Length: 263
Length: 256
Image (cartoon, rainbow over all chains, first blue to last red; front, side, top):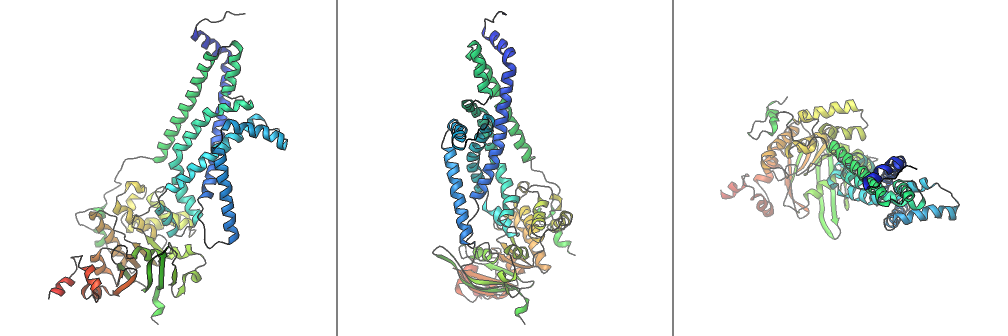
């Protein structure tokens, strides 16, 4: 057997060579879970947020009003329950519950995607609702006034602005998910934390391994946050105010060429 | 028949918010090519009235007729009515997520189902009309208030409305920007577009309006031609209100 390293960095180097690939695979699983989970969660949140903000139509039939109300109650319950319980517990309940109640033997990975998505969805639903509410009522009114219905106004005017406004929240959730998928080790998803724990056990070098893990997590979250920042900036377009050309009508010195140009 | 050229007819319009009755029975009609100016003190219900005409607020009582037919009967869906009766807001309300030209296209494309090329052409014509064609690719956040309001007018015109409702179109503007918007409005009036304008610009009302309606505490206190109302107001309340605006000459009349 080769001689074992004696210094801290020696061990780090040694462990990287030995378990680099395992950790890398773990990191990939973590990223995959976080990105897919955040994405599906956003879609869930978007849908829930949209349903929650459908205005009550007094002219609609009793049945459709009751239906809408019931839907909203159920969605409220979903949001409250999944925001109000820890993800680590949700993972256990979903994974083992599916097995014992419905005898569904889902893979840990599938359970992982499911739990992360539905958990993120609950948070995003609230963000989405806030995002929609934060758009000035005048935008909706203007859309209605040019003949759009509620759903057209939502799709063309409100949602694009609401989604832009909650982009920082989405970024936040992605970063939280990159870190929090570590709790999925309890249902033996082989993400970064699980991989680190296994690797650490071999030589009992917990500090050295988790020092590496720490850096890997940070690289992932930092990259994610920078990328999102860049994306936000790109969506906003240039910030500078530029006059496209001379606007004679706005000239306060009183020449109104439009009035003189009358056909 | 006189009734026949009424494009809009408001009958017995009442509107309450909860217990508070804002409009207490309003009747007036708008003929083709009329420019109706609605004036009155704040809180008198001017804005509520014009919003009711467009059904942005559901009237509590009363009917609104479009070309002699009750609106809900004349149109299967309210959105279609709203394309005939355009609206310009005090706060412009341009769609912030769209460029100037997109603002003027979206209604045509989504509501009237006009194809994009055609819609773009119409949008540009209307932007040209309000002097904003050079800004077609700008975002609303890059425009001044007056420019925004002119784009808002172009957006409403792009749907080729029969009537244009304007809710205090110059009230949110800095003084030096009021002129450019009024110039556009005057030009529209000269071309015979039917307009209903809630305004505090008495000089504009006096010069352009074919009919002026003075609203006070939810009822029409007085209505008539611009000359009638500004030069020979019948009611004390109207005189008191108008005396705040020194551009008008009825004070000189009183002095005589």
